[in-house]
Length: 435
Image (cartoon, rainbow, N blue to C red; front, top):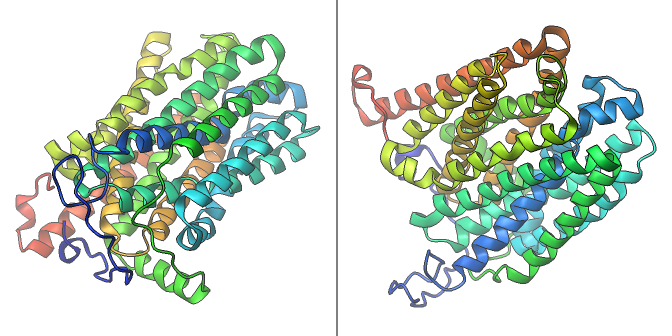
């Protein structure tokens, strides 16, 4: 899609292009592609970064019932250990993206992981809920250097045709991190308590961080930018003036509102009747994240078949079906609902985030940072509002919040389809699923 039909700015980076060097694929484009040099190392390195990011970011989510019991707080109070981390990330992702424009994507990602894993090893020793929430906020702020920098790195170092697949693999790492963190903490906490469980996640993240730094290839197409606030403000203003980017930011926030609410509250629901599951089994429920790994990594093929908007419709419909199915008092049906929610969310997120990288013609780190900021604001809102809704209306209340968010995704996607039709001069009555 060209800048003319996306509404993206036509300004491009003023830096000279890196010289084209033939690679093993026979193309003069020196950027990485599947089968080419460095692609597998890069993919695995960013996969591990995604694992560490989500494992740390949501390390307390599956443990909220235990934290509530140990610290004597309510579900909505304990949910702040999740909301503080995602809120810290949302608040700092834009400043961290500016640092990555100046000092480099790999440098910022490495520093962010180093600080985050250090804080992760301190979290188990938090003496009270306020101290725990404060540490989690710092951890989230540190992790802010990962998502936007990783997306910008991929947009610069990977060929456009392989970008959706590459970002899908990074998102797949997010899903594996979220899953493994919750499964590990569930079983460890059942035996030794939530503090030991969080410490184990911290150690896993340390290993991922070290491997990431050793594996990630040095960037070849990065040109340092300016740290001047005026330049940053102008770049952000340009992105926010782009209607397509605004829609993508809102879609990311709404998808994450659903996901944050569901997975913050699900532990409480499963400990209650009619399920009454032990903590270890509740942690194992998060194995459904593997579905997200598959759906995120196949997002490129979905876009190829259905177009970007068609893939978003499919993601939203799958998520909505899962929400409604999760209302069933049957454990198999409730788990199937979680599977559908997870598959729909990760597919929608991979499609929307990769579209941001393709749409932004300059300041890609800031464009990605704005998406990540909106995405994690949605996570914080979903965690908090979902917990409040559960406290007042049970699981049906949390599902109601999720359904409203999915409807928002559909409305925004339809409005984008109508806008594209009008721009192309096609009658609205001919509306279909455009690419």
